[in-house]
Length: 331
Image (cartoon, rainbow, N blue to C red):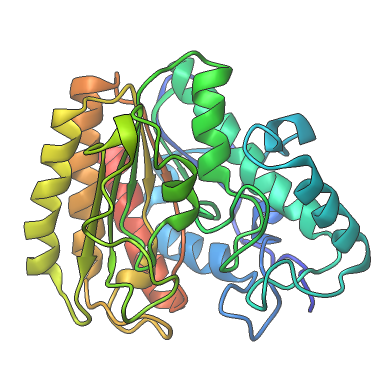
């Protein structure tokens, strides 16, 4: 499939020190997509940024250029053998990187490296107090496992970020919060027994949606028991149900105060997505982002990194991600 990036108009990159919020934009990020016709196409970043510009958010946020991750960074989470495989299939563009959801394309390795590298650069900026909040729209690839791709996700930038925050930057307790319609299984099972990764995930009940995991009873193993919160939501759940469940997320994070918050704000939980069955509006995403900003101020010196995740209705993702970005700017 053709993985060529789509141009993103008006993407003049600027940076000012001590910005309140920053967003990562550029063709290198847009290039992470699996061709026209695939739900995760390369036009998603353009759809979001056009909406953000229409709302005037482009004048209120610092814009950062994508950054590529090196191999050593990838291998903090992924196995060497798997990285080798992605490099090989990236050269040919042939076959799938999983059982049929995630096709290889020429340059897929480089495109995925820009996703991970941009997330890691945002981590660095946040820890250096160059910004309070950051948003990487094409990121949050939460299904990839340590040794394989899954569900449109080649490298798990969320997992790499967690490992980097602890191994490189010396943080201990990291919170990962996920409101994508799909369960963040690649993150959950990688850290299921780790008591210092505080996990909270609202997702469509796995009886109705891929990957079929994330039962309410899955709360962590061993010394991590109780540090993981999975909230399966019934099909057609709307904003009222979301807000009620969200109270549990905030209570969970208050019980285990984090030093850094990662927020996977997938827009496929908005009503009308072509491959999911939830019915939130973008107000749910704004509500979650606002709540996490306040939690970050109390516990993390403001350090909140949002990642776009899924979302396959372009209008939905444009509105939901813009709502998240606006909350990051205003809180």
